[in-house]
Image (cartoon, rainbow, N blue to C red):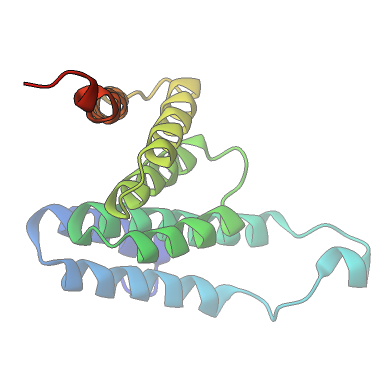
Length: 174
């Protein structure tokens, strides 16, 4: 099974709900290793041969993006490590196909959590909105995603009101 990257990814997703993060991460590493073992030597196919990459190469690259996307989401939810999540986000975007809206929504939501973990207010809202738009485009809008986006909007409004209250407080003694 460890030589089949898609199965490793599916098993890691199952382990996410029932096992420690480290066990799930090992299966993600196995999935990535299996994908990389099937990739041809790196080369710029278009520049060297004049032909675009094969469908198999594109599918393997997209699978690497899906692995990085899930790793970003799991890291954001489980560890709350904003910096690592953003690194996995970048890795996922480098590999995901433009048509893989489900994984792109997942990784945009992970980016939202990463920015939130880093203490930012506006970038998490923007990323949550992006994730929501991508999820809506495929008809896969999660109630959790909607709640999170709403919560982030409320938090931004709250922070704005609190800042204004502090600014005007000296004007109203007592």
